[in-house]
Amino acid sequence: MRNPLINQPVTEHPSKVTRLKVRSAVTLLIAVCLSMALIVVWEAWSSRQYRLHDKEVAMSNLAQTLASQAQASIKQADTLLYALVDRLEHEGVDDHRLPLLLNAQRAELSQIHGLFVFDENGKWLANSNGAGQTGVNNSDREYFIFHRDNPSRGPHIGPSIKSRSSGEWILTVSRRVNHPDGSFAGVALATIYLSHFLQLYDSIDMGDDGVISLVADNATIILRRPFKESEIGTSIAKSPLFTELLPKGDAGTATIVSTIDGVERVLGYRRVESYPLIAFAALNKDEILDSWRKETLFSVGIVSVLLAFLGVLGRRLIKLMQRQNRVQAELLQTQGKLIESNRNLEGLALEDALTGLANRRQLDLFIDAELGRARRHGSDLALLMLDVDHFKAYNDCYGHLTGDDCLRQVSAIITANIERPGDLAARFGGEEFAVVLPGTDYVGAFLVAEKIRKAVQDAAIAHSDSPLGVITVSLGISACGTDTQIEAQALIGAADKALYVAKTSGRNMSVIAN
Image (cartoon, rainbow, N blue to C red; front, side, top):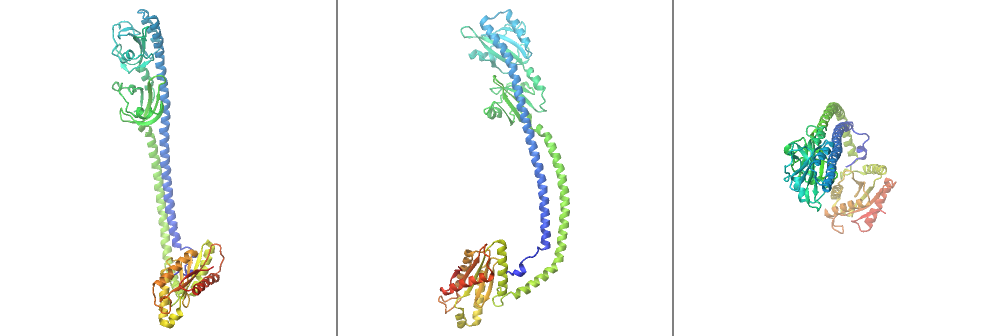
């Protein structure tokens, strides 16, 4: 049962304040440590993403440069072939002048390994590399077979091969030569040193495990740095470059795992303009992130030292605060016992001797206190006035001792049906009771009233002079809203009038005050 004079706090308990301070200090320490850890994680992640993105941009730019270099080198050779085919088809083959012409044209471009002309049977008609090669047949070469079976007049880029004349690795660029009637007359061929590309590729810093490649449209490797003869002609058709990236666009960047060596790399790629080739450059992802890992570990080490330092300081502070809390608890122990004794004494002075409920004095104090609280917090407050029906007749019939027992039973039923610790049940006088319900409006109060009324009726306390043969109660209900400045007596008076209406309207009912 709540006593408004005893239970209203004036100041917080010192030990509680200290405990709150300890919890606040622990919370603050944890928050600071977590914040520092999250900042380090965020910065590490941002740095990692920046490094990868930076290398993606670098690889994209490098791929564009490599594609432009390949296009320029092949274009120069193809221009010579175009002029050569036009001369052959209009002027025919001059056995004496043609080798000299080829040699002169070859000398103009350092990347050209050789210029060759073959007839429709694959026989060498002329070459730029000097006499002595006539009679050699190249009808088995891929470029010859392609032009023999394909009427296209455009340039053809063949796979990398070893030259039969010099034994060097070369890239073939060829065009078809036709007879005047359009039939196949042979092939004009320009060969480009693979070393021409490798000199550029080797001059670029790609780390210990970086790769630069020139790949044909059919996914076969033309050239790969670092150079390995065994990898020339290898198909990478199942690599992500051909299965995922190129179908989406002619240029781009990505992080993929190589099908050649299984290394994960950051890749930039681009198609070579006008020719069926793809240039790409890729750096080992682990190498890119190696310096990032070292920096991150260094940052983590510094933050770990700071966190450890904060942890030691925080632990000392918390121990001091806990020690202070124990001292305060010991000092307040005696004071608590005295306060508890005073509460017990005052509680006896505010308790009804017959029912154990609050008496009229405590009821008045409680209503005044709760009205003040309702005004401050803008909350509701409800009051139930309850009267035992035909109680005088009950006393006359069963005697005052039995009547007292009846009142004790009714008070127990009331107490059992107000379950909130903030509610108060009191004996108002005689057979009349009151129930104060803080934070409750008319609707809630009516539900509680009906619950009590039904519980009393269901208790079946025999009363021969009652119309129902059992003890019943009537209830009046009043309440004040958040904007009402009602006084205690007005609240009690309104509930009492509603109780009067209930009793004059047939009893055993709950009535809400107007």
